[in-house]
Length: 99
Image 1 (cartoon, helix red, strand yellow):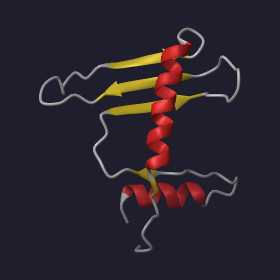
Image 2 (spheres, helix red, strand yellow; image 1 turned 90 degrees about the vertical axis):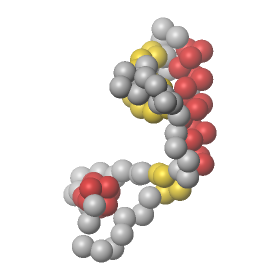
Image 3 (cartoon, one colour; image 1 turned 120 degrees about the horizontal axis):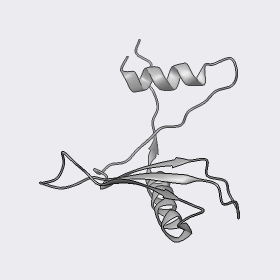
């Protein structure tokens, strides 16, 4: 069993009802996006960590930055929409049954 299988099976079996959803895409992404404390609607809470995946050069020091919804709503919405688009196109990861 690989680490991702273990993570999904362990988290989804927690007694407190924990769960995790992992998706895969069929192409190498150009950006990593982590969304934190994002509330739907007009809430000003939330931030997004963005890591640009560089090509050929600069891979040892990629641009990494955080966008705060309250301070920069336009860029927050841009990267949040990018995340949603990638997520919608992803296939749900299903752990193998091999132990």
